[in-house]
Structure formats: C-alpha cells, structure tokens
Amino acid sequence: MGLFKKNPFGHILFIKRWLIRIAGAMTHRRYRGFNRLEIEGSEIIKNLPDTNVLFVSNHQTYFADVVAMFHVFNASLTHRVDSIKNVGYLWQPKLNIYYVAAKETMRAGLLPKIMSYAGAITVERTWRSKGENIQRAVNPDDTKNIGIALEDGWVITFPQGTTKPWKPIRKGTAHIIKQYKPIVIPVVIDGFRRSFDKKGLRVKKKGILQSMVIKDPLDIDYENDTVDSIVEKLEYAIEQHPSFLKVIPHEELLIEEALNEQRRWSYKEHKH
Image 1 (tube, rainbow, N blue to C red):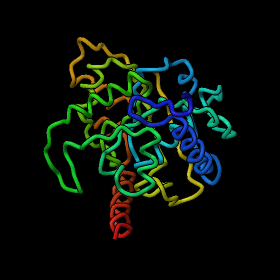
Image 2: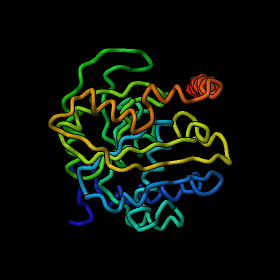
Image 3: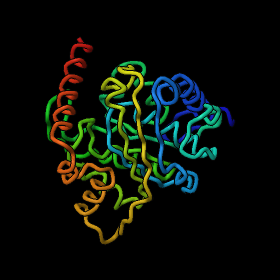
C-alpha cells in the first residue's frame, strides 16, 4: 500500500519523490556549478513546523525560482546551512512542498506538466489570460486548494503573480493569510532573470551569481490586520514596495526595463 500512497491532490508520492530526485540532479549545476546560488538565512527552515507554512517571494522566472527553493529547503532540512553542496539531500525530499502557479503556464508543454506533478497548485489568473488583460472573479476552488496544501505542508507563492518587478501584490494572498493563518516566511531572490529565459528552463547566461535571502517569519495579527496592511507588509518583506524604487539608481531601472523588453521579444520569437 505504501508504494501507492497519495497526497490530498491524488498524486502518487513514490512518483513525486522520483520526479524531484531526477529534476534535482539535472538542475543542481544551475545553482552550484556554472552558476552559483548564494543563500542567506536558511537555518530558519529546519525549525519550521511540518505544515501551514506559506513562503512569499518576488518572482523572476516561471520555474527556476521554484526549483531553487526545492533545492534550498531540502538541503536546509538535512542540516546544511546556506548551502546546497552535495545533491544527496534530495534522496529523501520533503514531499509536501507545493507552489502556486498559473493554470495556463502549467498546461503549456510536457515539462510544465511534469513540474506540475511535483507540486503545483494551479490557479486561474483573475487579471490576465493568454497575454490579454481581463477581469475575472476569484475561483473559490483555487483558494480552497491552497488551504488543502497548507493543511498538508508548505506552500510557495509569488504574490505579484508576474515575473515583472515592482508590480502590485495581489490581495488574494492577504485573504489567504487571514483565512488560513499560516506562518509567513518572506524570500527575496535575485539573479535568476539574468541566468535564465523567462520560463526558467533554458540557461541564458553562465557565471551569474544568483541570491536567495530567507527572512524571519512576518509578524501578522491575523484577526486585526486589514488586507491592505498585510499587502503592505508583504511588499516591504519581499522588497517590492514602491519606496524601494527611490533607492535604486535610474540607470539600473532602465537596464532592468530593457532586459524585460528583450526577454519578452525573444520569448515571442521562441513561441513562433
């Protein structure tokens, strides 16, 4: 019976374990090889409870960010501090790590479908579909699935819902925090946009230093904090509050914008 044990979403854990092992072995050099991932604060991970933890992060690529977190979280649980040295930590990975991803992203091709089995909670974007701006009501099943995942383990979410920097945080994340009262751990990443293509599957540049900072749990009063005040706390915690723009040199912002534009066009060409 143990061989066919499933998680609450019907995924067979034996298959999920092997997917994580194989994907981990194939991607390890992207973070500790021709590119290097600098980690800070990972000692927090091993002291967290087994369930009801929500990781909130800024977002730079569709998949490379999440894969890096799977590496760092599993390495930290095997007492490696700020290191992913020796991929053996993935032999017995934590199987109840989930991440929130857009439904249309996870349906686009075989690899995303495999990645989906490894832990995606797919949600319908309420503001964008097939490259067009839309307005759609939140699907209550999506929120419920995030709640099920939190009850079962840890959930990674990117509350801006886009890989573009400085975009507003979606209020849905704050509603989930108020409803399910998870421990909220902010994560700030950098360098992934320079290393990978938009999807985070193809290595664009080698010799890039990537970074991941894992911060202390956010101080949230679940009953009395308003949705707006939680959104503001998240913006500051993942360093995406508009005030951060004032301390970034204008030249750097222009370079960032040009990079985004270049990636957008190369992504379109790649699709055709």
